[in-house]
Image (cartoon, rainbow over all chains, first blue to last red; front, side):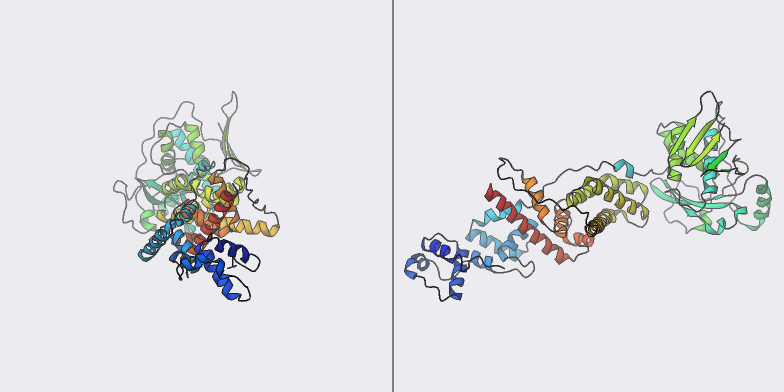
Length: 351
Length: 161
């Protein structure tokens, strides 16, 4: 540490000393300095105060000279800072009390240290809403909406097979994906009664292949018997049909064979029981062998939004946006039954 | 941690972590990007992070992103040095908070961070050490020396006033 008193300024301190106007710490340092510089001729007659003072340094001066081994600061500062940091141990507390008693001026230092504690400043992060993720959901819907959602789901599952496209989707099951003829599976996570529930959703081939494969597979596997889907309420009069589905992706037009996802042609048994560890804390009200068709799944994912008074198109768009992490826009031509669902670069036209 | 818990963390701590970064780098846009980035990283590991550790994870990630960014920008020479605080002695009223903000600007990056984590977030030395990759005793030394510097700055400003 650089010394405060040096050959340039010691006379000023000598003057203060002679006037009795010097602090204990400065006097101690001045004495040390004069001891180190015997060549300096100073007159002790000018220093009556020294004789009046005790021959030893007081506690405060010592505390200002000692260095704390932990922080490297003077013991006095260390104690004062420890006090505001609330890290004083009992012996330090006692030591500080003695110092404050010996020199009440230290309270000013303590107050100054107290001011170094940063006051709380309220700062608001404006983009908070962008960070919020959609939470879990469950249940029914009516046929047209469910069909659209199921079709969209299926389309995306076929077109984006290896992408982790949905925060709830944990990825496809690779072994099943390897054989495209037997459909595919994907794992979803849903919040049921505030508990995470993982499900392996299996989507099997559509249309003609379905019956054949079902027959082939039925005796060989122990697949859980499908639970009959919930009865679907009547379709809205003006509900869009799924007969024509054109998919445009990056300029390339594709005609997916599975465009109209028929409820009867797809079975989606829940393989969670087979493919994952048994869950110790499974919610009581969940059915362990619950079977989901894509339509049922679609119902589950849009239900909460509809219950929250969202319109059907809005709920669907939000769900698809969530699924794909892409922008979704629904356009309807004037005086025409055609409408287009734009999902990022993908466009789906429907009547 | 599930989605609901993640959202709770967003609601509870996005302001705090933003304040921490903003007061460090004094650039709103960069601070927002760092916070966004930290939450993105947390979301990617949402299942691995226990809810009770999420706040610490968030601050750790944001802090390290900030350090990486500032180092990279310093190397590229585009880092805008924090402007030297001006002691406006002629001003009749100088807000203590403003003086402290200026004083903070005089501290080193690590000193500033540990003091802010201590005062704004109420972290103990161990937790700060985990965030800043320091030992508990290093944190203590940084904080004590920072307080000493802050106090000297405050006293000097008051003296000038």
